[in-house]
Amino acid sequence: MVKYTLKRLLFFIPTLLGLSFLSFMLVRLIPGDPVLLMLGERGGSPEAYAEMKAALGLDKSLFMQYLIFIKDVLSGDLGSSIFSKESVLKEFMTRFPATAELSLIAITWASLVGIVLGVIAALNRNGFIDRFVMTLSLVGYSMPIFWWGLLLILMFSIWLDLTPVSGRVSVEYDIETITGFYLIDSWFSEDGIRAFLSSLKHLVLPAFVLGTVPMASISRMTRASVLEVLNQDYIRTAKAKGLSKYVVVFKHALRNALIPIITVIGLMVGTLLTGAILTETIFAWPGLGRWLVASLLQRDYPVIQGGILLIASLILLVNLIVDLLYFVINPQMQKGEL
Amino acid sequence: MKGGGKILTYLSAFFLISFILLALFAPFLAPYSPYSLNDSALLSAPSWSFSEGFFLGTDDIGRDLLSRLIHGSRISLMIGLFAVIFSAFFGVLLGLLAGYFSGWVDQTISRFTDILMSLPSMLFALVIITLLGPSLMNTIIAVGIVSIPHYIRIVRAKVLEEKSKDYIEATRNFGVGGTRQITFHILPNITSPIIIQATLGFSEAILNGAALGFLGLGAQAPLPEWGVMLSDSRSYIETAPWLVTAPGLCILLMVLSFNILGDVLRDLLDPRLKGL
Image 1 (tube, each protein chain N blue to C red):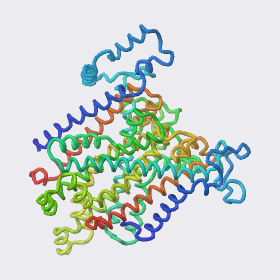
Image 2 (spheres, chains in turn red, purple):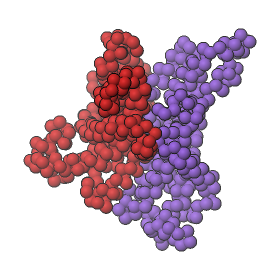
Image 3 (tube, rainbow over the protein chains, first blue to last red):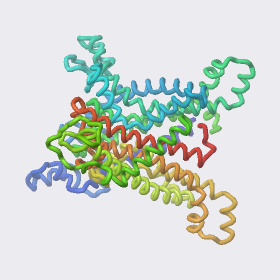
Image 4 (tube, each protein chain N blue to C red):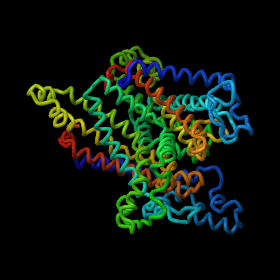
């Protein structure tokens, strides 16, 4: 375990260095002069230009620039936005809870529904239900979620008038940020339950959209995993002992089938963040995805540079944690058999 | 293909062939030019008739939606085709090198692959687009680059597997050189996984390309790219729902067809995976 953890941590460092180099080069590879870009269209005086260049550290050699960049990153300084003048780290932190809340709800429903559908499909292998579930999951997997979101807005918000079109909560409710999760924070606001219901209504559609693709993958994978386990000897033994079908499936098969499924769910943080970029754009959800797209469109380079580094580190960190958890839940790995 | 059997396979083959024919003969099949404006028919609803009006309606500046969709199939298939060629070429090449030559060549390529794969493909494509600037050409490059690691991993693993087999040992004893060994002996034996990956790569490329277009970071208006069309029609979702429905349905059908056929191919070419 210790050896494995160390190995993973050792790999973590070059990957992070690679990513930091990537995001460092990003700003330096853009065609055009970043100094002029940051000074704006009019450019300013030659003194202002030289001052800006020195402030950005662009008058030093590339290697020195990279060292300085790494030093700044390590001390938590990722630069600040050209437009809002806020520090990138602070902007990241204010948007992070919105994306986290959305993603958590999305992955929760996707896992529950996906696992149940996958088990049902596996138990009815090649039957009508199996075919139906697998077709459904194939459609979900192929879904352009930016269109899916618009369709659901059309149906539920415009035609049926059930859910709001955008944002996290109605403007009439004033929610103070405590955890950053509106479903929790709304309870502490003046309007209590009404604010909670409003934020829940705002969350339903985007979370449904964001969870669609993960749900499809999870159901396919659960089916495959359960089928594989059902073929194994100990299941045959359990059946031979005369245990009922449900005991065999839920007590023996599912338990073992769940290990790879849980790992894959944990590793879906990348899929979720990618999905969040599109989902947040459609629903005007004030999270990381929308922030990144806005910065890309505005060519706000410090934000793009820092934002990508932070988002990539977040993904790596979650993957690392999942990997280590996998180690904990899979006894075979602890014995060093894998 | 577990999930629908023959009917679904035929349906997706039918859709795919239709899309390819539409793309090939777009100028002859489309009733109007995808760019011609009709001041007298702004946001007109679908007429569902070819003899009068506009079959699928028009957009906010009076362009015929059906004609734009037909021309759009060209763009999406082009993104898919060129991105797949691009990524398969570099991916297979690097994978062959990494698998055949062990040591630092393998180490360098594999570490590079690991770093690329640690980022979700969409995020990575966005980074590349930032560098190159948004356009159709750059969409193909960005979407192509992000799929390279898949090919490297598959090809490398397969080469390692083949390299240890007797027939390769035999060719070596006959004095066959490295390049010849790779191109004439190893490569022909590992084509199945490459073909499977390429088919699935089509759907990923088309989906990512459309997503970039939708975000305003891919193909640019007035190109009739389906993602761009969706994003342009967002403000008319209430007044002209047909504008939002049709392009997305095209993306879904095309991506779904490629995914289903990819699954069928996998079952045919790699029977070991069947049923899983």
